Length: 188
Image 1 (cartoon, rainbow, N blue to C red):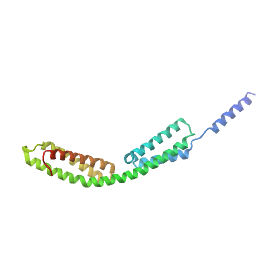
Image 2: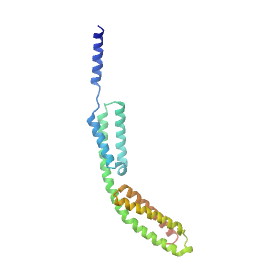
Image 3: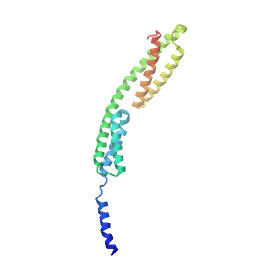
Image 4: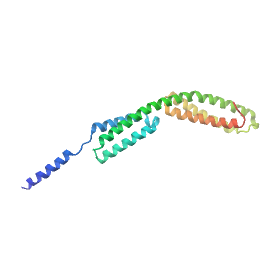
């Protein structure tokens, strides 16, 4: 008799479990794959804004999965796929822009370096008459030369983001020395 009373309760519990929404696994897997593709395309480096949108969408999806509220999971997964796809496309465009920038910087910075070295040689030749600390300028040029050498290694290794960062730093270092030398009257 007690068993007969328990059967409807068990049936109701089984029905509740069976009718509970399930994870749309295909959508979640597609979202994870799209987000991984965006990461692999270095969207965080070459398309930071787009990658942030994809990352935020992924965070929302993960929070939804943690909360086990699967009613919105498909929509959130689609948002991750869409944002990740945009981030990947934007990263490809950003990479091309960065490559163009690196090519230009790789040509321009050595020319600037040579000009600064000529200006520095004039300041050194002027000796004590120079209105510039030639020793400091030499040290600054040596540091810039090191940056340029590291940048050229990054260019050879085809690490575009690293090469751009290092070339930009070298350019800024040479430009700072050049400004100091030219302010003292040593123009190339």
